[in-house]
Length: 300
Image (tube, rainbow, N blue to C red; front, side, top):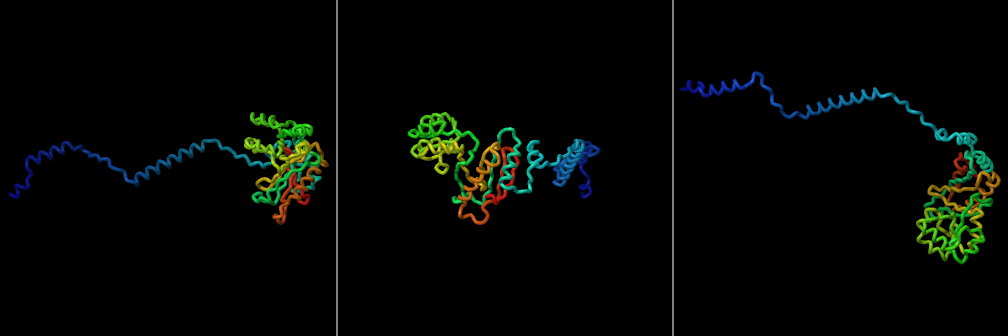
């Protein structure tokens, strides 16, 4: 019985023969999931090929030579460079020498303005060190100033004093149209309230009347004469520097020095008591589009 059990039955033999006939000579392995290692190797291989292609493309491009960086002076125009050669950069000049040199180094064809820049040892964030003042330059500014007077009762006196436009109604009509055909606006204290709605337009342009600048006053005739004669206002900027025009190149060194001396006197008289030590850090003079000239601090 045991031997008979070991012998395969006829059905089993037939099934085995059918499987052998259906199986190909060479069996092909069924595709399965790739391992993480295989995926990483394939990605690295592809990245290497891309880098090779990119390197080959870069090699085929023509080599561009980088131009050397030029100094600030070299980037300026021919006339400026010619004028700058007359100024010694490592030298400080006396005020008279600096102004004489400024009149000779203006690179423009028009009558350029002469500018004064004084770096003071003050902190404008402190109220007592936020310098602001106005004065009349002895020789004027050399500019034609258009003056408007925002007043009715004083309009006739203002016109006689040289005002270009006077009267509340006349100026209001211009402001309503967005026109500001004036450089200085003077108003009386009684009429300041009427200018309130125009503050956003006048303020950013520096045209809003202010008592500290002498443009809010009851004596409008005097204010007009001073404005026409060359009244200027200065105020330190956020870095503690005063920028101010002191005249024109055509004035000559002597007249320009008178104006600068008047400004120096004003700066001295307004020195804050809280400032200790050095008051003046640096003084420079320059013309419109011209080179800067360093002035000795002892001049102020």
